[in-house]
Length: 483
Image 1: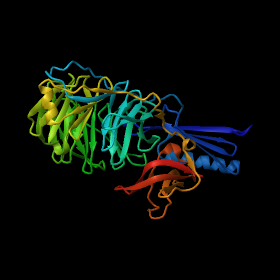
Image 2 (image 1 turned 180 degrees about the horizontal axis):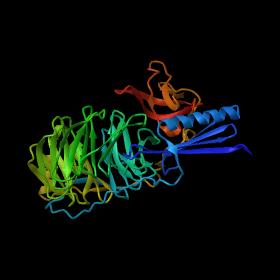
Image 3 (image 1 turned 90 degrees about the vertical axis):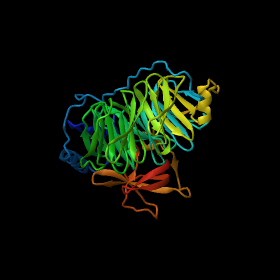
C-alpha cells in the first residue's frame, strides 16, 4: 500500500434464504491501487490487486465493481456478523458382525482417520479421510501419492478422467494434476452431505434436504428443497439429478425445470448408487431398493440385517453389494436373492466400489480394504479359509501435495513444451475468464480453471484440454505459468 495513501473500503455480502449464495465482496482503494477480496462468508477468500495510472481511474474502476455487485443483489454489511459454514460430520455406529465367516481380505490400508471417500478406476484406488488426507494406491495396495487438503473429505467423485474431493471447508478440489486446485466453492450456509459431478456440473445435497446445482464456471444455476431432510444421496446423468433423503428419492430435470418423479423408500436414504437405467438407495430400514430412472418405480428390494451404510453394483447391476451398521457385507443377485453375507473384519463400510471381481471398502476405522469377491474366494471364505490380509504401510518420506492457492505457487516455464496447450486469462463482463489461445481450439469457449490462480492477462501452459458437452474445455494434467 502506498505510504500516506487515503484508503477506502467497501464491504458487501450476498446471503440468500434458500442457501444458494452466501458470499462477500470487498473493494479497497489506496491511491492508485484497487484490491478486491471475495469468497464465502467466514473465509479469508481470494484477493486480486490492480494498479491504475491515476487515482481517478482507480476510484472509477472500484465504483464500477461495486455497482456491478449491487445490481446482482449484494448489499453493504459488517464483516463477522453472519456466521460461517455449518459442518455436519456423519455420526455412525459400528457393531460386530453377526456373519459366521469373514470376507477374504487381500490387503488393508489404514489412513489414520475416519474415512468416507472412495474411488477406484482402471489404474488407481483413491481414499479420503476426515483429516483431509487423500491417498492413491495401485490395485495391489502400494501407496502412490498423498494429497493434504485443508479440511475433512466428505466424498470422492469421478467425472470421466477427472477426480474431485468435496471437503468440509465448502470447496471441491480437482485432484487430476500433481497439485490439487479448488474447482468449486459452495455457499457457506449449505451444510454439505454429498456431491456428484456430471459433465462439469456440480450437484450438492445437504442436511436440510436441499439440492444445489453449480456449473463449470463455479456459478450457481438452481436449487430445490426436497420432501425430506438429511440428503445423503446425490447422483446425476444426462437425464436427471437423483436426490435421496429422509423422505425417499426425487428425480429432477437437469436444467432445474421441475420434478420428474418422487418415490418414498423403506426408511431414510443413507447412500446412493447408479447404473445406466436404475438408481440404488441404501436405507436406514435395512434394505437397498432399485428404482427405475425412467419412472421411479421400485424394481427390486435387497434385504440386509442392519441399516445400510453403503451399496454398489457390478457392471449393469448383475450383482448388488451392500454393507450394514453391523460390520457385514452382502452380495445379492439382481432379483434380490441374497447370495452371501460376510464380516468385514474391520468395522462397517461407509463407502464401497466393485471392480474386476474385487470389492473395495472404506470402513469406520478409516481403512481402505480390498476384498476378493470372486466366487472361488467367497466359497472358500464361507468354509473358513481366507488369505492372510496384508497391512499396507505408508512410506514415511511420502510428501503431501497441498493445494495451490495463488498463481505464484505454480511452476513456471519459459517456452511451451511440445504437445502442450496455452490458455489465457481475460477480463470479460467484469469477470476473469480463461480461454484457449492455441490454434485448433474454439477461442470463444471458456476453460474450467481454478479461480484462485487466475491473474488478469496471465498465460498458462496445460498438458491438454478436452471439450465437454456443455460447450467448454476442461484442463487435463499439470498447470504451469508461461513467463
